[in-house]
Length: 77
Image 1 (cartoon, rainbow, N blue to C red):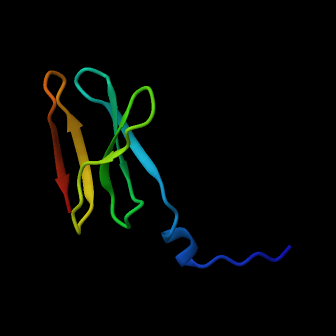
Image 2 (cartoon, one colour):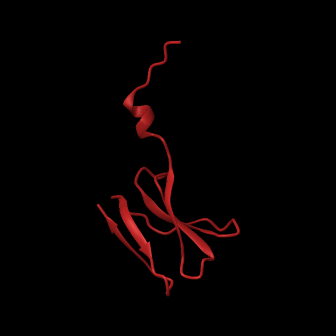
């Protein structure tokens, strides 16, 4: 079997990563690169209600959910 891969195939892989719960654990916050850059998303813990939280031209590099309030701190590159 002779399979060829090009770098473009790897760059176009979409992924979700770095999940965390919000302060009351009702939502899962995570990063996803569906738009071409990593952005923050939230989805209800029980499913449904997907919402994109950020929309920047540069990517979100890290984030942290407040343990006591409905706030997220993040950094972008």
